[in-house]
Length: 378
Image (cartoon, rainbow, N blue to C red; front, side):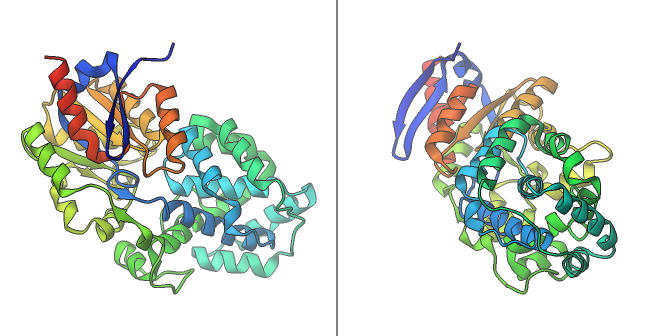
């Protein structure tokens, strides 16, 4: 049975509050935000970087050029809606494996054999060596988009683990090893190429401390982003929460976020910021990246003891993150924002169908939501 929602309008669109969660939301005294899609409008950056990275990799591995437009917003949203693909490296990896899986057996055998031979050296050298050894394949562009959307549906919340369970026996373990997914920037072909395309050579150097290997373009997709969070929202939240009781739990590198947020990042105490590199440093054999609740719990812990934490995000993976955190340490609610998602309306209705605690067009409606539930639950 679908939950009932209280609806009200804002200048940006309609807001929704679950009636049976209003009492919990009224207790909110800490807010934790993801960055992309919440603090920043990243619609033209991450999906574009995923598409271009995939196009480059498919051309290198299969010898067939697939225009980046094939990997469009509809395909990107299919993976984000699935719930297991919060990190955009994981989407890129899934696109590549899903595309390669359409090759015939002869081409796949050659792919695996060359991947094993070329698997020496840093990412750009490995990919260059692969291109020298391989011949054009029989890859067909027609149907790839549809196959990828089906892959997203089949993988669901299982993310990359499900992609590997579905495709690795066909594509070959040597290909996964060659791509080094998952691994670090500087080792993984997927992660290194993506971060260079996303940030451009200048920001890549600033963020990771070594020269870009794949591109000499100084700017990247990050330059298409814009800030959503307003100074007015920050001031209202400080008043409502009793101070700067907010944090960030993001899968992005901190330096990339600061590039666009600028001084606005200083609104958030560093002790309540958890970024990609922070989670990497804490991870051992078990990944603590989302949808694991680690980053959310750690960001909120800066304000312990607290009554209730609202987590603001724009994907299904983050709804799972909030629910996983709540299992471990009950006190977490989820606000899904949709205006900066692609596509916005489908994102909104997916949040409604999945029973999010509250839904709003942007992060800037959060103060109004808290004020409304506090008035109506007194």
